[in-house]
Amino acid sequence: EFPLPRIDSLVDAAASSELMSLLDCYSGYHQIWMKKEDEPKTSFITPSGTYCYLRMPEGLKNAGGSFSRMTAKVLQSQIGRNVLTYVDDIIVKSTKQENHIADLQETFASFRQAGLKLNPEKCVFGVKKGKFLGCLVSTKGIEANPNKIEAILRMEPPTTRKGAQRLTGRLASLNRFISRSRERNLPFFEVLKSAKVFQWGPSQQKAFEELKQYLIDLTTLTPPMPGAPLLLYVAASHSAVSAALVQEKLDGQLKKLVPVYFVSEVLSVSKKNYTELEKVLYAVLMASRKLRHYFQAYNIIVPSSQPLKDIMRNREATGRIGKWAAELNEFYIDYVHRSSIQSQALADFIAVWTPGAQDEEANKDAEVWTVFCDGSWGIFGAGAAAVLVSPSKVKTCYAARLDFSCTNNIAEYEALLLGLRKLKAMGIRRAILKTDSQVVSGHVDKSCKAKDPKLEKYLDTVRRIEASFEGFSVKNIPR
Image (cartoon, rainbow, N blue to C red):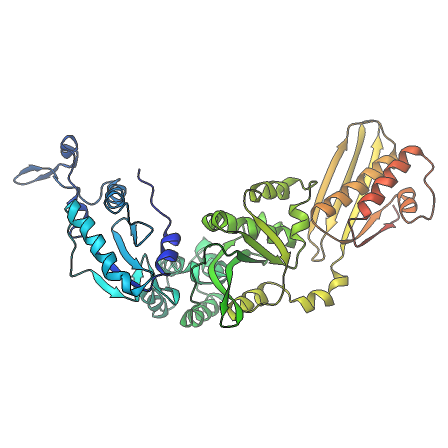
């Protein structure tokens, strides 16, 4: 099968032209001859006999790919320069208005040489704004198709399951333009998931009205400039993660952030149990999967108030974070601290999803993690466990079996180190560790001295890891 180009890349390329012409081939598929040996495969029965197609009909599995291959061969010297094609959608674009006549002449010469005909009734010539692949493209940027928006604004609240499916289907074509689209559409999906009788409740009606209000003034997207880095703002809520891909451009003398693409995803039941930090990391991963072509072509900068750089560069990262870091390692991604936002659309995106910098400083003392550590030794073996409790009371449990000869105090130290290493891998800077071992807590807070050479080595390891934290304390809790 002939590979089709990415729609997003074609739309971005079309939006950078000053003048464009939209072409439509006359009976497009029927301009391609069938192979003689393949003609019987298209046969059909009529009352007057059996017939077969001599030209390629619509409905064949490879019809779209065959037509794309034909246009790619005919316009080979122009594609990407002044022509964009996607199956039977052909657009002649000119970065300079005065060059458009020459670009059209070159395109017509290629069609004439190949014997292809155009339908003048469906062609549009010399426009500054036109509909291409479901979007409205112009020098101002990429806008959503107004017909699609109008279809949603005219909808009445759904009264059946099929009506709700029609609504979500129409919204799917506008996901690129809607920030936090999955979060906004979540009430509609909840109705569809319900196995009971369809019921359009107050939460759905409120979301429906807010969505209509949002669509009235939908954000205009901007195609990215080649060579300039892209910024990826990510955020997470309890039930969804979202990302906004933006680029910094000059608006007069001021730098302005303009949106390029919005993506989001509803979290599954298991992913809802992720910690806040893991959800933010998963948002970066989700964006890299859905916007892979942008990640491969541009340098990505991820501004965040979370310590993402420490986590992704940590060699001790294990489990899902280690897998995510390995997957993201193929891209050039730089993690920086988030500063102020110079765009109203992005400001709304960040304000709804994440706390502001002032709130973060005010709640700095509340962002302390609690770790419960415990280790034990017995005749059947030894083990260590650590339970990490986030500021939002989300618990994450870790356990390890100790396959070497040890004492109960060594097992308690192993549990403490297990908790510290997991905190370090997650980029946590402040924590309170609680253990029922008076020996371990006494060594760490220096109320007593370690005399056993083995315990001294464990204490030295704790001191080395301590340098990775802004501060942590070890408290003894009674058994």
